[in-house]
Structure formats: C-alpha cells, structure tokens
Image (tube, rainbow, N blue to C red; front, side):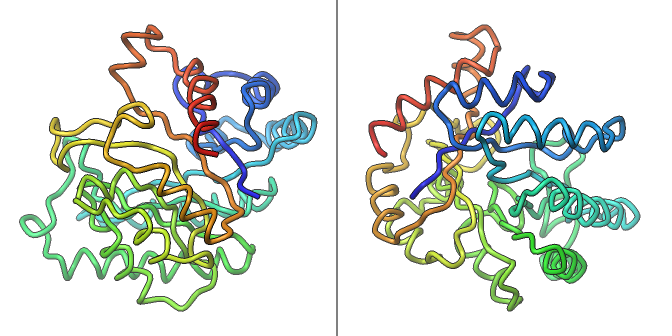
Length: 284
C-alpha cells in the first residue's frame, strides 16, 4: 500500500519535533521527509534524536526519507571529500533513528552562484569520475547499515534525468542503490511519458517518490514547480503506473511553488501540507 508523506520545509524546520509530527499526522500523512542539515545539525544531541524517535512513534508516523543532498561535483577536492564524509556519517545517524532510506544528488548545484559548469570548468569525464569515487565510499557504508541510497536526478546537475541516472546506476551492482523518482525534473527535459519512467525503473529500483509538478525548460528563470496538477506531469498516469507496478513505498509531497506560497500564504510553508493532501486524494 502506498504511503503518503510530506517534506517539511520553511518555518516548519524550526518547530519542535512533537509539534511537527502532530501537524503532519493531523494533515493526513503517513510519513514525514526530513533534511539532514536540520535534524543532524552540529547543535543536535542524542537526546534530540530520542525526542524525534519518540515523537514519530507517538504520532504514528515514520520517516520516509532523509535528504543528504551535498554537492559531489566540486573542483575543491577538500570540500568534495568533506561532503562525502558528511553523507557517510549521516547515513549512520539515519540508521540510528530507524530511517532506512536517504536521498542524495550529484551536483553541481545550479542555483548556487559559485556552481561550476560541466563541460566548461570541468570535463564530463572528470565530473563522472568524482561521482563514481563518491559512491565507492558511500555505498559500503549504506550496505553495512542496511540503508537504501535513493539518487534523485535534478535539473542542471550531472545526473539530471532518467538517462543520466541510469548511467550512474549501471556502474554499480549494489542492491542498496536506487532512485528517488521525481517526475518534475524529467518533464523539464521533455521526458513526459510517466509509464515509461515508472516501468523503466521498476519496483526494485524505486526506493522513494517525490510528488512535484513542473513546467518550462531546465534553465534558471525559465521554469516553475507549480501546484500539483498545473504542470506537465500527468499524475493520473504516474500514479496509475505506480499502482500497476504494485509500488508500496512512500510518495512524498515536495512543495516548491514559491510564488504561490509567498502570495497566498504569506511565505508560510505549513499551509501547503493540508492543501496538497486534498489534491492527492483526487489521484490516490
């Protein structure tokens, strides 16, 4: 049975865990998606982890996935290695709180001003070499801790669509390596056949799903992630394909309609949770 989740963001990241878990549960969700920079921040202690685990248990929620999204395509070797080390350490912390799936991307991060351009500042060969080396370090840690690594293809990055993610996956035989399937990034590259995307990965490789729409082309300022159902993702076909595949993992709302949030909800992120849950009812 599909589990419905929500990625906490905005002002929700400053809430205490009891408030966060109760809110997500009351909004109608089965699980919550969390960000490592928040729950594993330097000021967090083991006691904080215990409070999180207890809050999840008392609310009846589980953690669908923890985002460990740190750039792996950097010319600064020391920073790149530091990011790999951080991912490995946070995989261990994720396992300690009972989370079995983490989300990673490759980089370079296109929305940062100092992001490098593959093909101009670094060759594609070198960039792929860095990413393969990173996963050589990451996957043994994940396998040891029985944590699944879900790679998300993201616009503007080395791994940015179905095909580049397939290339990454083809270089490793690990059962702990799969995908976080987010159709919004694929449609920006013209991959709009939802049955193809879902069946192309298959049940064994889809570790987690992001629910997000998109319209435009993958260039800064030339696309938006609108409210679910207003973009180019055919969600009826998408969820139909997941059901036909007998997918029983999490589908997690990743709300990034920033202009809508700022205009309608005064910059508050929390109102998007119950609103998007009602939209999901139409599909699920």
